[in-house]
Image (tube, rainbow, N blue to C red; front, side, top):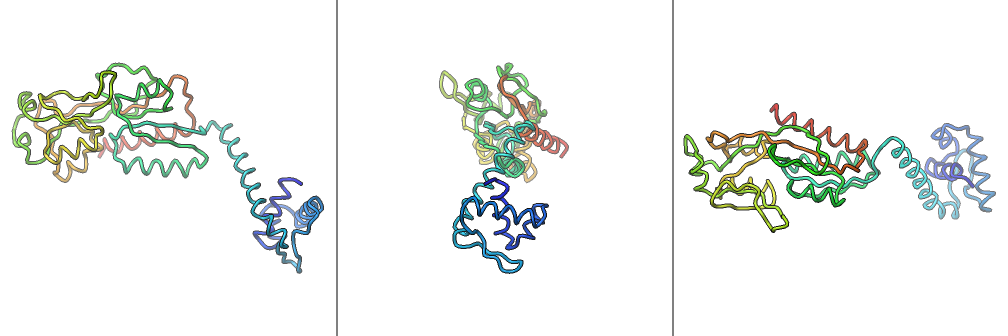
Length: 295
């Protein structure tokens, strides 16, 4: 009994004809017929009832069909996984990323990844950039992706800069700061600054600390929504703020340093070897950020 014979059996059942199964396999009708006969001899049962050119499984043949289909599917999966390994495609990828880019972008990326690399074990987690270094170093994730201040200290992980990103000082339309023709440092200190909170060895801290009053939340989307509700002012990356700026829900403050350039980066362990999946993913992120910058 061979895998080829089992595959022939499955295809004859599926097509209802030895000739049609032979065409699907690119074999002669006689070769497939001989394979079925050899499988029947090995198993000691009759698998098909034959009537002219049409065949249908016997009761025992119908009973064996599901298991034979599983054997064929498993063998094809093994072959495909070996091909992908030889081509340099990762089998598993654990990613932690921040939410500096819209969730709609990441949903589309996960869908496309799943379809393009169907054998990939993929795990996406949400984290702040301030916590990614430790996650990479501990081996919790393979890849960290997020927005990083250009002035931040060098990462202990290997860093790949994907694109510069504009980050803007924004506030809700109608907020007192939005009415000023020129916003000073003192004006900023008079109103709460909404920053990104992250865990440190010393406890929970807020990344931005440019105001006497701070409100720390876990993610950029919460910072955006709280700013739009008039709670305070905040820094937001252009891809995440674009829609609210266009509709007028948020405005950029008239401050001398209201726009800065940060970097969107990928962090990886020095022991991590990227392959086709990582290359494809980072190329999609680069292209998306290029479109955002040119919009």
